[in-house]
Length: 145
Image (tube, rainbow, N blue to C red):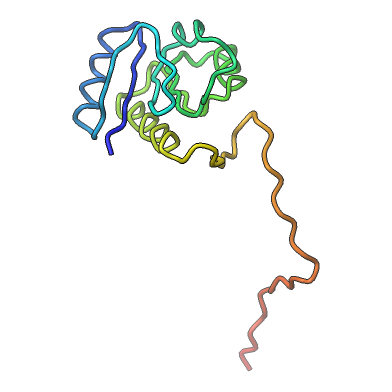
């Protein structure tokens, strides 16, 4: 299944390197855009300038890969927006590719299926409680004599 990756990165040299790497690494349809479109079935790779222009709250932030500087204010803004894939502008192309692949896996999940995440600013679903009738087995000591 071919996925779509939409790049909106001001650094044209980096965007070109990433586009080439994506084309070589998998079945991606890669588009470079000035302004990302709201297509729920694509991965958006944004820089901090594009991210700042997007209306908040983001629709489907799990599909966004944000490339930004590692500054607390920028990271906090990404966290509050619900973005789970944030990479540094100093990271290698391979690291960015991994983030894109992870976002693509989240995009391909059926709509409405909760994506489990241990680091999410969104309220988590409470885990089911164990019934008091269930006995949890404990390790037993083995006698050797």
